[in-house]
Amino acid sequence: MCLIWGIPYLFIRVAVSEISPATLVFVRTTIATLLLLPFALHRGGWRDLGRRWPALLVFAGVEVGPGSFSPTPSSTSRARWPGC
Image 1 (cartoon, helix red, strand yellow):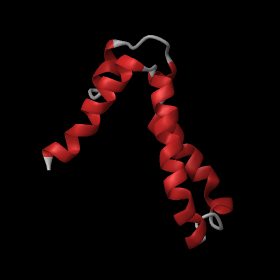
Image 2: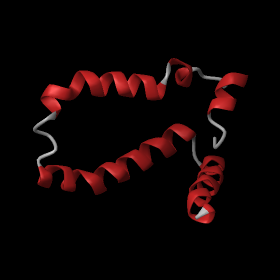
Image 3: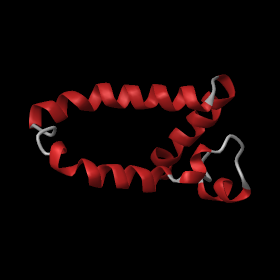
């Protein structure tokens, strides 16, 4: 189980040495969206989005957090993102 859990962090560490972290996040998010969007559309997952977008926006803001947008990582953000 730990191998399955830890291998993406190894791949991220290798990939970040080759491409920028922003590009890596964009590529991973795009691939995940392309893979999961057909399932969401098929199940009608977009119907409830109109009612729930404020909660989704709050959740995204809490998850991303204001410290994630700083250009240089601080000691607190480094401790918050140990896999990065």
